Image (cartoon, rainbow, N blue to C red):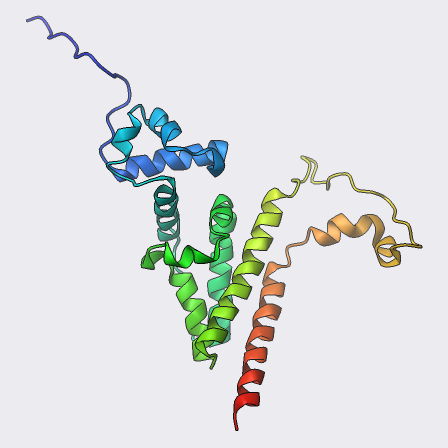
Length: 229
């Protein structure tokens, strides 16, 4: 019995049937070309469909990025957070740092202060844990938000600087760096000299985070004590 003729039209990739397929293709594009170059048109071409079809699943690029971020955070295993408020803040911030370091483009997308109002509640557990830790420590709502924002700025800054810094060479040596400074103009830098790349390249996030959180909580406690009649 002869086989029926093949249908006309697009062949090769199967048709998009789910949002999961769209997100997987979008993540592939981002990993390959960067999130700035992600467009609805390019994503549609990658999937082998028309851009109009995508709009049945997503509203626009911002909606797509938000869905990707929700998905990324949702795949992260939640650590068991300590009961002590200060330690809980540190643990949640460390989880946030690790999540962003694993996909640094997310830190760039989330640099706007208003991202908390965009993400799904399930993706905000790290933010909730930091704010709750500050609240349990005795911070006012204003102080709790300040604690989070300070920790957030520190974390995002550290992730982005490292993501955009030159990588070490294949032989594990640091990139070329000047061998000397003019001691008459910058005496302290001159004293450090060519040791700067090694010293500056050390991963001190955890140490700095603990110092920052301790300082913020002490500042909040001092303000509370000052306001108490």
